[in-house]
Length: 416
Ligand SMILES: Cc1cc2nc3c(=O)[nH]c(=O)nc-3n(C[C@H](O)[C@H](O)[C@H](O)COP(=O)(O)OP(=O)(O)OC[C@H]3O[C@@H](n4cnc5c(N)ncnc54)[C@H](O)[C@@H]3O)c2cc1C
Image 1 (cartoon, protein in one colour):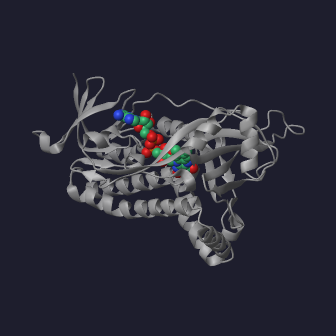
Image 2 (tube, helix red, strand yellow):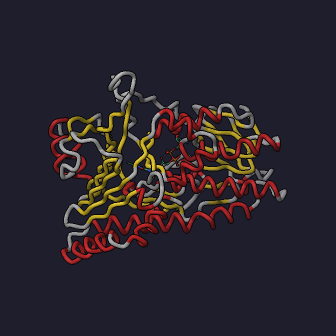
Image 3 (cartoon, protein in one colour):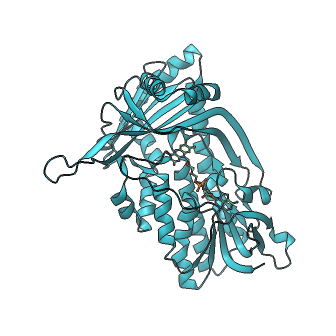
């Protein structure tokens, strides 16, 4: 059994854990500190041509700015991202509708749809050049000894390989079902939405026009997020065109309905999908393999315990209806990285309680606010009460007609 000491250990190198590691790695290298990344999974699959990762995220300009600072955005953009300039959201049960437009907001785009696997691959590739980072992969955290249980006041992290890492600070970035959160004894508030999100890639009759669309129904929201890929054949001469008939869909539906939709054959699913989406992009002409993900709302009552911090989905998971999960997680990493650097500048150990207190104070309010908003939306659009349906539709139309309020809402959602 090996016993190795690190200044900081991150459990989970998904989007959030890898982004945190990349923010800290150069500072650790300058100071001769060491960081360990423990990742249970293998390398993400590579999707190219007309094949897309079924899991995508809508990155806000705030998240893109972080990836720019980390020197990654150009490479990610050069490989494949889809910028969207418009967003249409409408009430499927009434006439309410709201539209957002980049020109109206004075920005180039509202956000970017990016495949999860592509982001993770670029983050991990950049990390592999960082001299301050040691990788443990595939390796899962299988046990912990908290600071109060050890003689030296360090956290002891046990891996399935038998290795034991000791550290001043352990960061749990191991996702919604975080084992680290469980081992460290964090208290979690959790409830099932009784909904599943069906995710897949579809091809539509009409081009998406670089617009993200979402229709709210009583059984849950249905989103079509624009994707594009290069045309297999050059259009004329050597000009390579973009094919913009692909969308990633997230169809959140009550569990019984989701099971019914998953059981349909491809033709029947495409027909149903086109109809439920009010043929906003014409017929759905093809679909990739479907995946159904059960949806939960989870929130840890605290984000920190002595020597341990939670970030990303390990701290909070929310309904995907506004595509905010990763964006909130990346904001967690920025706050924690800033606190770690602040502690270093002040000569404090990374186990200092003030570092963790300040991190929690910065992030909990923002995360809870977004979760409450998502919960409100979900309940409002899930309602079958006629006066409420009328009120929400009137509300949407009213907000749509008030540019100042609409812009404020859009800027909040965009993280700018
Ligand atoms: C249907 C759907 C659509 C979504 N759409 C959006 C969107 O448009 N925009 C957005 O911002 N968010 C979206 N989200 C949310 C987003 O996917 C999550 O917030 C995000 O993936 C969380 O990242 P994470 O790194 O915290 O966790 P994860 O991505 O779950 O990564 C956790 C990592 O930890 C590793 N791990 C797990 N256990 C261990 C262990 N014991 N030891 C070591 N490693 C371990 C895993 O292998 C994994 O690599 C969506 C979610 C769903 C379900």
